[in-house]
Amino acid sequence: MDTSSTARVDKLDREVIVTGLVVVSGLIMVVLDTTIVNVALETVARQLDAPLSTAQWVVTGYLLAVGLVVPLTGWAMDRFGTKPVWIVSVVLFAAGSALCAAAWSMQSLIAFRIIQGLGGGMLLPGGQTIITRAAGPQRLGRAMAILGVPMLLGPVFGPVLGGLLVEYTSWHWIFLVNVPVAAVAIGLAVWKLPSGAAAADSGRIDARGLILLSGSLVVLLYGLSQASSQGGFGSWSVLAWLVAGVAGLALYTWHSLRRGPSSLIDVRLFTNRYFASGSVMIFLVAIALFGSLLLLPLYYQVVRGQGALQAGLLLAPQGLGAVVAIPLAGRLTDRVGAGYVVPVGVLLALLGTAPLTHVGPATSYAWLGGALFVRGMGLGAVMMPTFAAAYARLDQRAVSRAAPTLTAIQQIGASLGSALLVTALTQRLTHLLTGRGIPATGTGANQIVSLPPRARATVGPILAEAFGFAFWVAFAMTAALIIPALLLPRHPTRAPTPDTAAHRT
Image 1: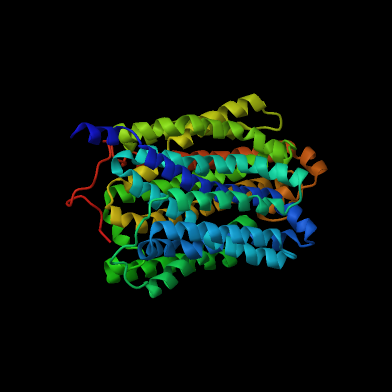
Image 2: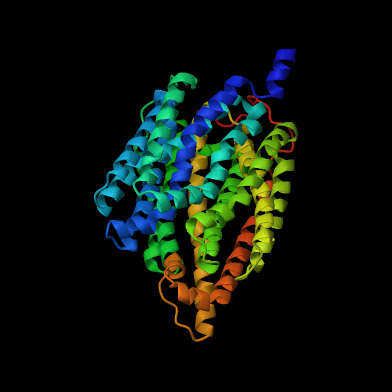
């Protein structure tokens, strides 16, 4: 290997860094938007004179739109090129944001959120495809570390921004804030993104596969959102959706095996051992990470009586821990392989989660902050190295189809994690309340949020005990990451050879 080639492997060049930053400029608004809207939902419902049950469709409608469009992203990038698809996605998200800010009723807001979701759903797989192709397999760890910034910090700092906007401006600004960010992202993309030419053999769209896969994802995600809102999986109104979604995915798998490389997403990608183990890991990481991110602000707001802004600030140590770990984990992944980095990250995440299982109504904020910092380091050392490992041995032409696959897996895992932890929390709370002769009201997360402040003060220790139990479930979910983490590659990433490359689309 000559000197120039060695330098290219050893560090990210300016072009890759600039490409990554352009992608981040688009992704940051999408990741922040989700948490900002969650914080402001109750205020929006009150000002638009709508019940909270209807307002929940502001979140659900966006989620279903993401599920609808994610499978289409790979084909669209192959057919039209990565740069045009990225720019159109940002434009669509910005247009949806502006329309949301101008909404005159809850129904119009829900409709405009669906438009916003159609753009947002393509940005994450599009961004991963762009950065993966720009960096090459030898530098994926460090390249993915750039994308880790919005993915891990957005859910932490989103509540802070949401709290500020709700407290000092009108609810319209939770959407308007995206428009100038999108304008900057579009300008940078036109100026700096690589052209990303369309593939010569993209072919016609797999319409039957699109109907099967998008439909199945929408049904499955809706079922999981119902499980969260109802606080359990036992109702037929939940199980029917979940069974239908899983059955649809099974049908798509059969369809893809028959159709082969021309299917929308070729399931034979999973014959690549590293992609398969990385996919399982991403699914479990999403369950453990995003489910816990729902519990933490709820604990601070419900048990400790903090507002949205204060709860967001108290979550900041987790983001700082991720900031410390992400660049170091990226460099180590490229040098020694994700198989050495990710297990250490899992152990750190467990070490940071363990203190949360003993939370009480007066647990020291300093103690919780230290635990969250360690937990953030663990999560920063797990998520993006896992993505890098999943892509490392794929042919470059397969990346555009692999990225939507991993995004869909992550989205399902996040929804499942939230549903599981809300179920654990609310069912434990119901058990504790009824055991003390106190009637439980409401279902799902609403059961927690709808408790009046006086009642919260009275049942504070019971609430804290329920949260501790839910964090034990989160601890077990995090511990489950150890097994697939040990299957990740324990060697530096390198370009795939014809014998080891994944299926080529």
